[in-house]
Image 1 (cartoon, helix red, strand yellow):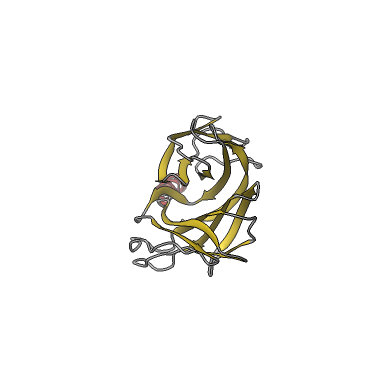
Image 2 (cartoon, helix red, strand yellow; image 1 turned 120 degrees about the horizontal axis):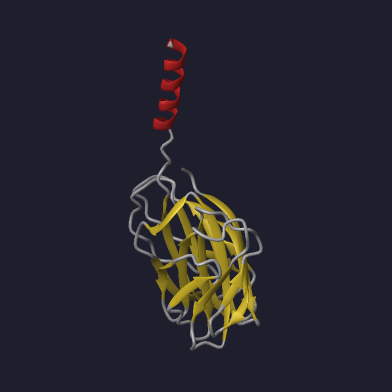
Length: 224
């Protein structure tokens, strides 16, 4: 099963328990990602209004990324909230994809620098072909103009009070056994961080046995 981008949104949230609501109706079986960047970002757990379960992908004092397989709340909007009592302001992203199982396939590549082309470190080699590669960038400084890196599609970005900015991009990993890096392009150099991760595809559904049983039933009826 190939992965596909569904939708995303970004916005501001209080640094204490930063929350954001999807602007679209989510779909059961898809994967919903939550990323937050801000002052004192120390989110220790994530929950949503539908009761889905979130697993940690990446965390440091600057950026936190979680993801959940959507098992509840399909067909409606959902509000996702991070538990964090130490921050004062935050920029948050929600992004939904189909066709991904959710676990990170390879070690996350991350790098922190002041640059107008911030780039992550390379991940380990992927173990599958055509996986979802996400790049998440954070910038601290004046209101930057952000574009996606080479080969990537920028899905959403948000700047909070011309200080904390967050951006989300994706691309296809290509052949199995490749390392991945993510980057962004800025008009001026900003201090920031870029994280890159490859996400496994969902296992293909098996419908062939069911089709065979139907065909056998029709054949028996014809013989009778």
